[in-house]
Amino acid sequence: MSNQSRRKFMATTALTGAALAASALPSFSQNKKQVIHHVFFWLKNPSSKEDLDKLLAGLKTLEKIKKVRKLYIGVPASTEKRDVVDNSYHASELMFFDNLEDQKAYQDDPIHKKFVEDCSHLWEKVIVYDVQDI
Amino acid sequence: MSNQSRRKFMATTALTGAALAASALPSFSQNKKQVIHHVFFWLKNPSSKEDLDKLLAGLKTLEKIKKVRKLYIGVPASTEKRDVVDNSYHASELMFFDNLEDQKAYQDDPIHKKFVEDCSHLWEKVIVYDVQDI
Image 1 (cartoon, chains in turn red, purple):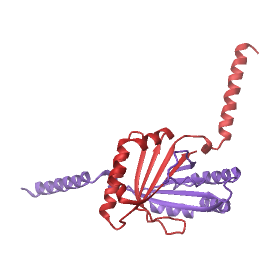
Image 2: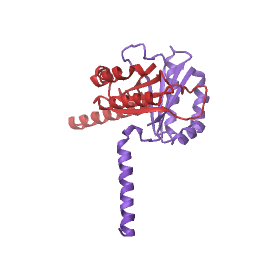
Image 3: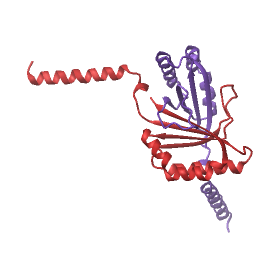
Image 4: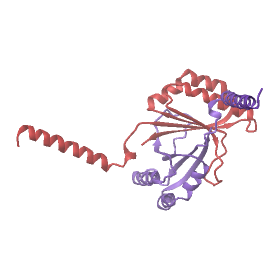
């Protein structure tokens, strides 16, 4: 085998090996590093449509934060009632970040701080789930 | 004004009125009807890497269900510890559906039923949040 052929053979083998290793892994085990930030809010005055609208409008301002890749604002869906379903919350904020650093930067962003300042009197409880996409 | 002109005027006015009404609404109030289904799992054996892998592999099978538009499988992200952050869960499944009907169809899908059959012995607690995107 010439040096050139050997190099080519070795390069091909290495590539095939890498491809095999990659295909052997289920796709969800590839660390995409994407961070999903899901926040649920319970209002102090659940019957106040005005308070809900204020909170939703406040959440809407968060989409101006550049680190926020995607933002979904929502309310409980009218899916079937089941014991495992918690539909007691009043508003939901779902965000995607490229990585942990961006999520941290978001927490410290002036627009986020202003939202908390303007709206935190509206809620009595918040639960945050931070998920690492795999 | 001729009948034809009047019809045209009325149609234009109606359209302009509709456009104005739509533009007056913040964009998040347009009902996109998308349903976000977020499920958090707590394992019976939190220290078992094998059980977690089994659960994640089971969750992965759900992407074959055609009604599932997007599927994100994850684990707790290592964001900063705060009182409001619940990072006690072990696995997260986040799905997007086009509408409520598709979410219902998903619940009844044989692939979903098989996942529950194969994996429900692994978890001790599940919380489901169904969100209507607005």
